[in-house]
Length: 475
Image (tube, rainbow, N blue to C red):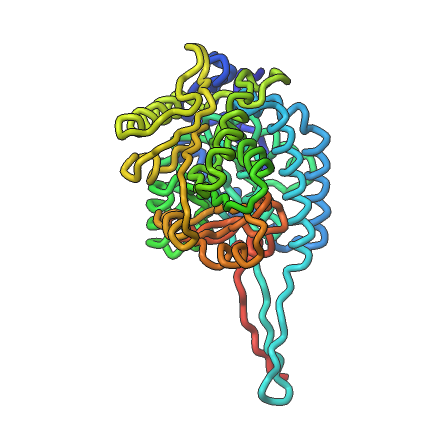
């Protein structure tokens, strides 16, 4: 597929100065490439480039920035098939999902291209003649972005496109496990005409890079997507240097299925969402609270969906779920299932690794899971669904809200009053009822509590890269 991958610094593709590591195909366990890791010297060059790039890019009009971004979006669409193959080989997801990710990335770029052109300030009525009070929206400055391996293109593009639309430059640290697809993404921006230094792409030891970039006086904004523990650490580091931050962290999404719900539709939709990307999704539905009257029907249909999900190499069109991204996920999922079984849970289907080559795991459904099982309080981040019964609405809302996470929640009901009560009561940054309606470019994406703060997507996703300046002028 590729032999070696370069970093992108100051408009040039360069080899990193540090040691190298292999890139592994999770479906075959074979090496498909080599990635050099950045040293502090490389990061110093990226910082200098971002500083210079910001001074250039902020002076480009929002109209012209939008034109360049739209060209990048068209290039991503034109190259989607090729980049998608790389994405599948290094991350594992089925090729159809990789193509969807690439097309979604192009839509994100288009959205921010337009929204950047509408980043208006405002006039505040003055108290005296001759005074003009203005609020001017300005780009915050160079950004340090950190993106994860589960969606290596769309998670990176949310940070890149929003930064550039606001007039910021960015150093984006993408995941070492999945480096090839972000390279393809950045090449589209380069070929679209983004000036040197405005985007800088680096890879390396995550802790070393974050602890060097964030304290730098050049960096004015931090955006991180990843685990709660790492997010808390990076947020503390950013706060200690008075840097604004966006934290998009983990979740443990509840699903509430009421007795008046479309059970067939809910089971089909949530089954597809649960095993998308092998469950390695921060908004993946995990804790299924199903009303006692429809529990058996819903669980039966969900189990049949899981059994019918063909697991295989993501490049095989017959595959509906690919491998987990790395062996660590296999170990983690096996640990969750063993712990739940030890405490009395039953495996309705799945529960085992598939074969010895690659990181394949069976789509799994657990029932009779006790409250003290680890999977009830820790995000599994894999293809495991937990089925739980409920009878009372107030009780199930309390159970759904009892964790420190608050990213996404799902509910299914035909009763308008119940839907309103759910929307008001669920402690989540995003609530979607009777369909999957989150993560669109025009809608805010973000959580509360331990799931983080700030947003990606929507006007909120642009505002976090801008700052308001108040100007009062007499005469």
